[in-house]
Image (cartoon, rainbow, N blue to C red; front, top):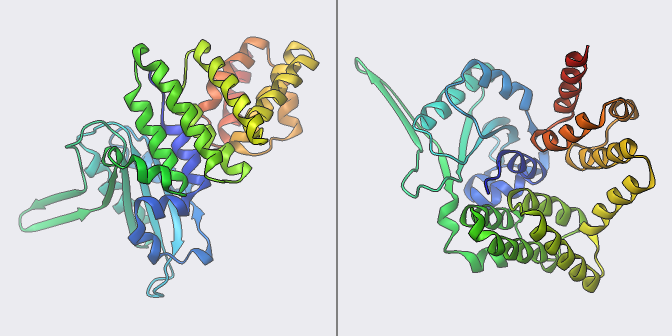
Length: 320
């Protein structure tokens, strides 16, 4: 069973960017002045990547940060999450870096997290030379396969990305029908670990969303998993996850079929992207039920309210 891994990585990185840097790139983390905050520059990055597209991008982020040393007021961090081997990956990172420097005239630090299954693929430099002129570019990488032998330290870590890495590796190692029972067991153990780590309700929900997305199960195993989870939550008196699911189900049962679907979709969209306007909710209520079903499938690929707006525009234009 394959699962697209781009959207959950985007969401968890945006929620816990400092922890991301601390976990994967601690040396760089300690050079950043986190007291001054940071800004995601997604629209600016999209402009550059459209101009310099050379291959399939999995996840990339551009972040404006401030340094502790005072030598430079702020710089840009370019992050790539790459889940498949790509021969021209280093070249693409180099192109993005040079385009970003050209646009902002600021230093650019590039980092890549490699989530593929090839232990030997470790791109981290690009070299170009001609007629005595040369360009040498290098960037930092973190290889997720390197964490396979660190299970105990990952379990003991209080960094959210220890859970993220475990879920990612579990998804890779439990592909195929024969591994689904083992996937269910890993999903349960990782989910209950969220409570044992003592994280807040919001942290539990955020991390569970990642686990649930990458460790999808067939319906019968998913139902068994949810029953086990509800029993566990009752024992802990912390029904964080099941309460959200019951809320959506109750709203669907209490109202008509279309309105129930809209209520549930609105809840899922709000969890994923923040609150949505009443105008948008009313627009959803005008959609036929088959389009609402399609939206339920498509929304996992959404990363911002703009994705929903564009989806609605497309549906409206196709119906006229």
